[in-house]
Length: 273
Image (tube, one colour):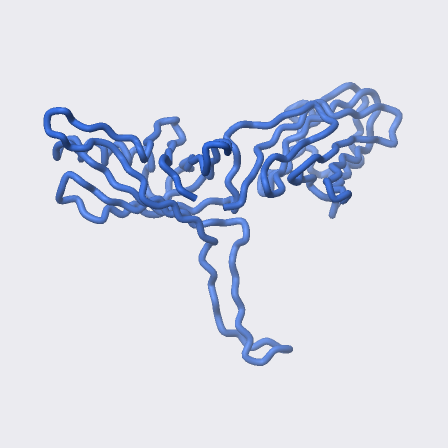
């Protein structure tokens, strides 16, 4: 993909836009940032030799399918030494100390696509030289997600969920329970007819309440009325429902005397890179 702009956003909201610069009318020198490369690759694979009982001379490779290494390359241009140093310091302030907080890497692959982002932890900031008004650099990140997600949140109150991206994503779902509810079957049926079902049991709900369910891997959670954790009520082995590309349908049922309905579903569409 050809990108003209890459924006780095710090946890506090401060940002640097690579691809934004001005020309000093007095000196004719450029002042700002340019982006030269954005590289996404899987996390490093550790390879080791190991004797395996059923395969002589086997090689074992371990990797993390849910990780990506990201390298952002660009350059700082200053109209003076002081200007270049100030711009470089601004970039360092956004990226923070290596190994620090999450930095958002935002970009738009094409004019017709939504603004996408990945969250990463900075592992290295490497200026290639700092002896002139131009400072080329490489910034390395590790992201905990293999996909880029839209910055705009999609939402619905139930029924049909349209995944606009090209990869499955995990939604946040709010249910409303009325009356006596001891069990819930929350299902999302995908365009190919397959269904993910999250089963809850032993809830012991006797009055109206809301149930918030987060399905994102690593952040799974179930909260009743925003305060009571209910993870222990998930039936072992039941799925955390996903939204696949295309039209999905969501439903919530109970065999108890009360009623369960879908109040809200929110998600960020995802794209492979």
